[in-house]
Length: 99
Image (cartoon, rainbow, N blue to C red; front, side):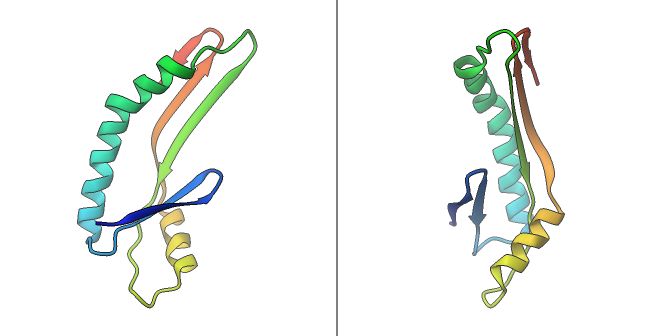
């Protein structure tokens, strides 16, 4: 188990205190698959109705880092940010949608 919290308006932090890095990578892979299969089509259907000249882009990035109970959380977050990769992108423009 774990928990998630919003760290800023565009950042959500998920902690998996009882998972190994390999388990966290597997969880992230499952999230990526589900995001592409279910969330992108749903977001596209509900929000990609841009007026002429308008556009919207959503980029999801994720990074994994390992820490210990006595680790400084900001240090662990910095490490995870240094390992971020893009896991999803949705672009909506007046002329249509691109994935």
